[in-house]
Every structure is written in C-alpha cells, then in structure tokens.
Image (cartoon, rainbow, N blue to C red; front, side, top):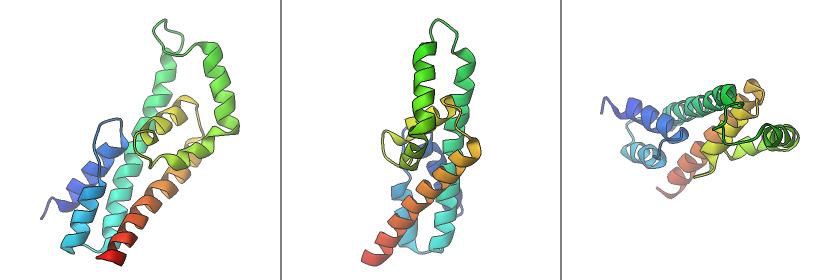
Length: 143
C-alpha cells in the first residue's frame, strides 16, 4: 500500500500527457479501499493531472521554435489565424482539458497559442480538480 499515493500521482500525471492512460479507476479503487481520506486522494490525483497538463503546455510552447521549419504542420498564416481565434474564444476551451481524447491536445494547443500560463493554470486547476471531486462525490453517494 506504500505505492498507492505515488502510483495515483504517476497515473494522474501520465493520463494528462499525450501518453495513453487513465487515472479514474485508480482513484476510485483507492477510494473504495478507504485507506486514504478523499481529500488526500483529490489533492494527489489533481496535482499529478495538473502537472501533466503543464508539461503539455510547455511542449506546445517549445514547438513554436520550429514554426519556420518546412516540416512544421501549420503554415505561419494559419498559425496567426488560430492564435487570434484562440486569444478571443479558445482560451476557455481549456476548461475541457479533463475531457477524454480532446483534453490533452487542448492543453498542447494552449501552449502553441502562447496562452498566459497563469490563466492556463487557473483553468486547468479548476477543471481537473472539479472532475476528480465529482467522481469522488458520486462514488461516495453510491458506495
């Protein structure tokens, strides 16, 4: 049981990156065992998931260094158009960072679009923590 919280952290971290994986089952398994307080599980899972999203954001920011390379997948014109759209409308799409399949690319796109990292962190923290809180709340309601 010594690896339960570090394992939850690692699963939550990797689940938030572009690597495949999910942390919800581990969270609910640990909640069912009852060896840790729900708040502890919430903090550990959320922290890992938020840090994983920050890695995606950093990857997106770093990728911009290569925007003038021939192999870069987006033209300068399209990148500028996307940045304008994202600056006006897309920043709140980061609230969907918890969604399966599209959440991780959203966090990378936020980095590519040079979203203010503190605003990014606030939205990601809200969405990821709320997702885990809802899962734990539903589990406790029906367990």
